[in-house]
Length: 500
Ligand code: GLC
Image (cartoon, rainbow, N blue to C red; front, side, top):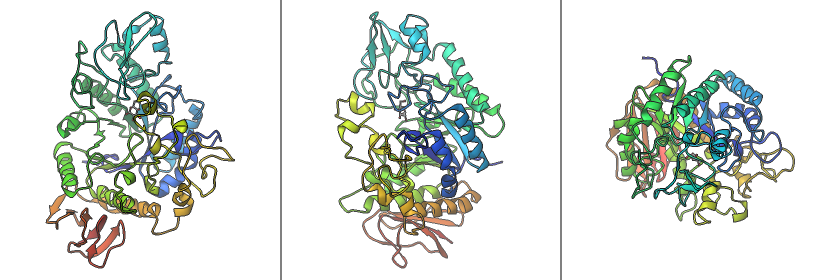
């Protein structure tokens, strides 16, 4: 069987607002991404995923789409998009775009018409409401002038579509065609377990993301992905889709990646697991035991950066663990999704002042939840203030960067063999050379307490999550380590690839 490109791909998430600003307005844009494609090629990723760049009032950073077939002037134009795709393909990088089918912006012409009383059935309007809460805090219903309420599982500016209306279905097939015809290699599907809500909209006890509940994961959603899959398969070049599916159950996750549905679904289990060999082993076994093609994710634009999640009272632990986790994930069968800035070891920025914050989560929770701005702070490219090379000229970026970003900048790390950036480059190169050539299986080996050892063909991977050094497994050569080894010992918070 031919191995599809995405099976072992490393995909790099670009949160467009925060990657690189070419226009000089303090906000990242498509031209900024285009300028930095050679950096991504050199880093060694196979594909990029662009977060939404469509016209939007930016109530949720662009996940509130007002026009699904254009580019917001803040990010450039369709011409910039076409140039970006052409350059990426020239460099051998695939391009995924984000598609947001659960809800639109309240500025979308359909919702504006609905407010005027036309085509309300494209959204979910009711005279009386249930007890559903918005994922961002507060009620999931907002009343309009004539007394009806509409459903929004996120911000009030993000009304949920009514997928029981065939017009919505047709519209999205057409939107997918629009981007496929422009040459995209696939889609990241936002809130993929949303879309359909249980008939009758019954009250719920537990509102959390669950793969199957009256709010999420209704069985009808799978027919949407079957149609989308047929559409993707009708195009040449192995076009694909990866779904954002939050669930505690690997079996429910597997429903989205049945052979006639999506090719991949994000696997958030590792991201939610503590630093523990038993937790990691369970995640790996559950994943490989249930889904045909695995994905691995440590961070994204919605969660606290993993360097910070792994931090302890001992300074340096978070970064050491982040590097060890990356090396271990890259050794597993499947594809890895990296989030911009993790290759620099960026931490979460936890001390953003309230007046700088932008995330609706912060506002809807009345400041009780910090929101997601801390992982969205613009990337430091150089050591120079005010924006560390993010924006040209003296412009301040849309979120303030901490002074520690100078030391973490690309300029500072480039060429320093011990830096996280150079470590990522070596790890991705090694991954490219070795891992794809070996069978899509993993064998556990006996491991000392606190550690996990496994082999994939001739490659042995060992990670030490414990508090004491452990003896390295028998091997020929050390291929790559996430931190310094002590002779034949693997120190705590370190991973290694060995060849046998
Ligand atoms: C997804 C996105 C998140 C957004 C939400 C609503 O979870 O990743 O950033 O706020 O959907 O669109």
